[in-house]
Structures are given as structure tokens and as C-alpha cells.
Length: 221
Image 1 (cartoon, rainbow, N blue to C red):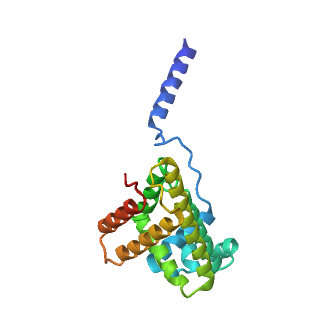
Image 2: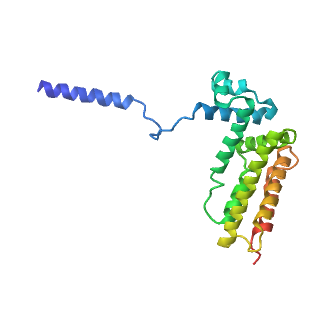
């Protein structure tokens, strides 16, 4: 009898403790970003705030809470940090939901092009950084080569989506994928620049881009 009472008391005590222990909001384990990834995201944030010429090794290191030597260990120097930051962001863009959306080829083209004129702070920061990198590349041959490569890949990706649209019937059959992709991505870039400098409201920029997509790609019949 005494043993049963003791067991009951232990059970009640355990239950009370369990009820008081905070439960996790989500049981899914999230893998933390590596220090290298954190440094790349910090560098991207610095460029969004100060421009590419305002990027300093010490700023990225301070944002992550590491010594400057850690940045040099991972990237060699400031140029290596900048190059890796562009590659990291480009890889993130390639895996973005808009770029890999399901649906017709026209749906994917529209989502990819319109996505860069979204209203979130992250999208706006990305637009600011790429605009600044493009401007800086005019005077920097090494940067120009990397930016050109990324730009060519972007045009190629859009052209592939247009080809998919021709095959599935969502894009007009007489559309020229390479030419349409070049024109639409160039228009998108120009509209983003005008939006960022305040020369064009974001809603108007989106409207113009959507109209151009329809004019270039939507079937006429």
C-alpha cells in the first residue's frame, strides 16, 4: 500500500513538472546557417544599405560577431567576399519558388519576371543590390565579367521557360524565345531602376511589365 502511494505521488509530481515545462512551438529541427552563409547574408545587407563600394570586411564580420580573420579565412579578401556574395544570392534566386513554380511556361515566365517587382523588403533590397552591382560593373572589368555571366544565365532561364510555354500552348507559337527573353528582362531591369529612384510607382512598373509579357507571349487566337 505504501509503495502504491509513493508511486502515485511520483506520478503526480512528474505530471505537474511536465505541465510546467514550456513546449516547443514547432518540433521541426531547423539546421542553423553556417558562419560562411551568415557572412554572405551580412555582406548582402551592407551592400543594400551602403552600396557595393561601402562593403567592408569588418562590417560583415561585426554583423556576425566574428573576427576579421574569419572573413579572410573563408574568402581570402574583400573581392573574394563580394564574388561569393553574388554567387550565393544568385544560387538563392535560382532556387526561388517563382523561378521553379509549377504550371505553364507562361505562368513561370510571369512569376519570375514579376517576382522582382514584389513589395517585400527582401525583394527591394535585392533590387537595390543588383542595380548597384550593375552600375559598379561599368568601371570594374572583373565585376563586369561576373555580372555579365549572371545576366546571360538569367536571359537563358527565361528563354527556356518561353520554350516550355510554346510546347504546352500557353505561349504563342511564333514567339522567338531568345529575343523575347532579352527584351523582357531588359525591360524588367529598366522598370526596376525607375521604380527604385522614384521615377515610377511600383504598381505602374508592374502594370507595364505585365502588359509587355502579354504582348510578347500570349497567344492571339
